[in-house]
Amino acid sequence: MSISLTAGQRAQLESELALRRRALEQQLAEHLHGQSRADRAHDVLTQDGDDAPQRLPEREIAAALTDHERRELDAVVAAQQRLERGDYGTCADCGTDIPFDRLRAEPWALRCVDCASAHERGAALRMP
Ligand SMILES: [Zn+2]
Image 1 (cartoon, rainbow, N blue to C red):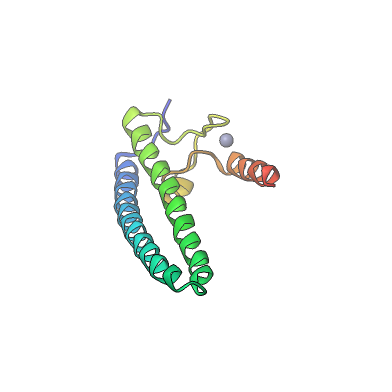
Image 2 (tube, protein in one colour):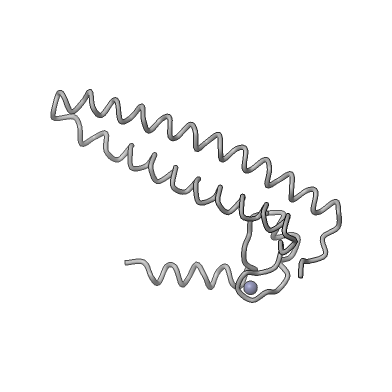
């Protein structure tokens, strides 16, 4: 059962998601492009030898950013699918309605605030 968003609220969230998706797709393309540029720079530097290790963190940051954006993009796309299916706005863990204020701040939110923080704590505990 979907929460009762007004048509206006739903339209607002839909356009937020569409905007976010476009921005992420653009950022992702830029980072992938930047990363391949860094790879080429790295190749040039390794021919010289000693400077190469300094290129590494930059590439790792680019890779991590790309990873983060890809995950966020997945979340945005999943939210758009939930909107289409009609099960958007209910917490994935406890099934409670996610308040519109939270959805407005984070339209791709999958969990209510309580479950999201419990989930994050759980993820942090599983960290090595
Ligand atoms: Zn919940």
